[in-house]
Length: 565
Image 1 (tube, rainbow, N blue to C red):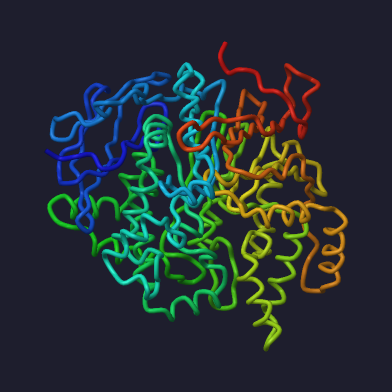
Image 2: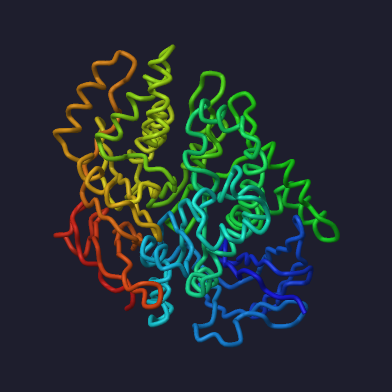
């Protein structure tokens, strides 16, 4: 009898359709029981591992349908001893939900049985949110979840994973205890997604994802110098191939709508070849093409779009899509940026831009990154020293790609001048929580914010906390701003911003709550440990005017009323 190894994960969901992802221990037919008629799909095989993405169509808008998962007609989900509420497919109403709740956050390490690692990681905010959901009416459950980077840590593995790897190869040789290939990546996903609370949450809350550097390696694609150095190692090619192939299976295909899956040539080929054979070689070839740069373009596009009624979400790949060679530095290639600009147009009230890396950062860090990018272009030892400083200090966010950052700013400004209520960039990566409001030389109608929530389960070192606080200090920022503007090679920033909340530290989860044209961000901190996770309020920031509460103006903290009537 086949067994369910991982999942089910509820992925793309809209008004009438949904997709559910699973991994099994052998080839089989996966059926989702509950919807009528019950849809099914045969697994496809990659390097001896078996997966299925079941497309469920013909659902009724604004309904909640409990479901079960069957493998070859034997029920395997819910688990026989489960005490959790039934997993559900909750479709969106036509025209959008009058109240929309999106969770987001980044940087989630797995659970660990090692006491030292348990103390270092703290309480998993995703598990704490799942605990709350068990006590709620499902009308209060989140409508969607965005995991905005670092779902797995390929370069910072747990003690248990290192022990597992050591049984496969000699970890006294590079890449040591880091993952080396596709097989070891599958271990990371099992370790991260198999924890009971997070597994149940992702079985019932539609989840979107995008990778960041630790999904592959710290500072992935920081610069061409970084790539030149890493590509001289004996292990990097297998590592990056394994990263992209596993990302495609575990994260990317679930981001796509059923129509997009039907138009995806690689998905069609993998499913067809992997049904009766093994599609590993096909995905390895795809991964090699995906990282190639040709005429300022990449071999694939990982960015995607989601619509939730009056909310549009554009999720941008800020890692694999970078253009670094030929003397050009772009966070996103021209072709992909054109796609982003095209899909930013439309009729909606709120635009959410998912970017693993913040667009607006602490002022001092932002100015340093812009100056460092110019310094790295200097010939000789000065440029080499600046490059070393860039890599050691992680200077590889939007401000260190100033041409791309300014292009994103122009796009946000154009949308903010239209009749939308808000534009928010949702980010993680930097291991602290903050909200910053943007302002422009031109008048805009929309409220524009940078909203950052990180980490979900991986606390920042205490030594770094005062540095992040200092980086927001205005006098220090003024010094670096003066130094930056002395350079004839750096243009003035086309946007100003001010911090309205934070920085906060510790594991946290953010929720973006939207009701009509009103929006707020609520951030809660996780505490209580692995076996009693819970959330406590951290900060609430009003993003747009609340017509029912004139005292709540954008940028102010406010108490959010219950979503329930």
